[in-house]
Length: 124
Image (tube, rainbow, N blue to C red; front, side, top):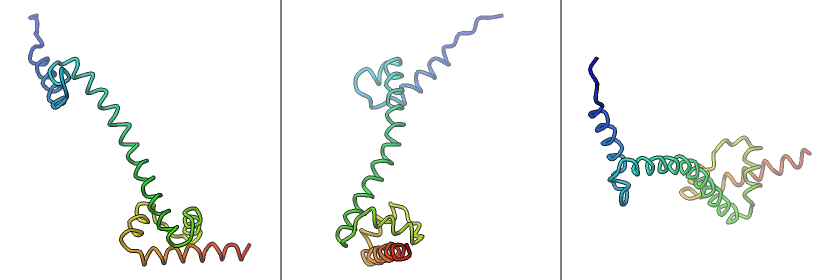
């Protein structure tokens, strides 16, 4: 059985790695082993930061909703509690957008939230 050299597969693998590492600084885009290490690390950072981005956006939305609530004389926690008691199923992203783009609708939501909170207190 003849010996098979893996030249084409090696070249293909090296090209794939170096193509993915294009734009990296120094030897990280020139040498296969350094590029491989850099790509593994970049993948770990990307995986982690995709989750952190969701966390950061949620914090931003909560901050915006909280600021809008304070402008209307209520607190974020009471507002969200009132909305859940009223059965309003809007997520924080949508509430944040409403607070920015449509203040009249947000005023109505605050009123509805306060009404449901006071009706629950009165029935208790």
